[in-house]
Length: 218
Image 1 (cartoon, rainbow, N blue to C red):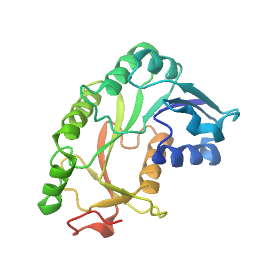
Image 2 (image 1 turned 90 degrees about the vertical axis):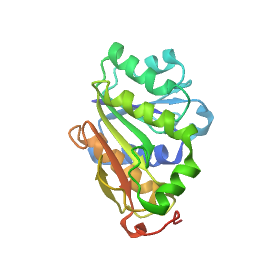
Image 3 (image 1 turned 180 degrees about the horizontal axis):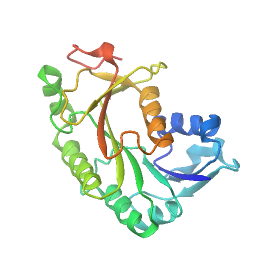
Image 4 (image 1 turned 180 degrees about the vertical axis):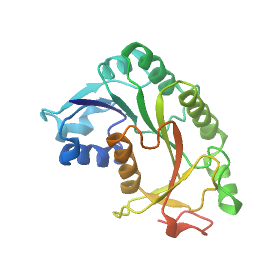
């Protein structure tokens, strides 16, 4: 049996991930613990024998510690762009007490100034230092934690149903402006299925057809 914990499970990417975790045969042995600030948004999962829902905030260390007890893997399904990165701090601290070694976290394209040209300038302006600075700090905390982390850097998100994407490694130029939430969920699931996939890595994700645009394509 594998035990996965998801922080911020009520978001749309998390919803896609949870749906596939509960329906695909390769994850049939997975038990889920969901730490939710608004558990009322997860009513369809209540009563599912494979799901435990805990009411609490990822900014509360005791809540994170409880939710990650016996976890094999933790998925942070929201960019940690709050000042002082409380969620990432709690994750790293809890990993030392609870012993989990695998973390998958969502982050922002442009984290390393890897988006060239006009779109890169637009991203810097629209996202702003108020989000980028803590997101960069959160990424550094994971990189320095000793955990087997996968950081997924996302551009503008769409609701396109298709799963179609390419990935870039840290240090590579980011080419493209948008990606579907379904594609991000698929990449998360690949990392969940195989601990060696994108291990100790920061990965960019984008839909290749959006390369060359200077604004997000929806």
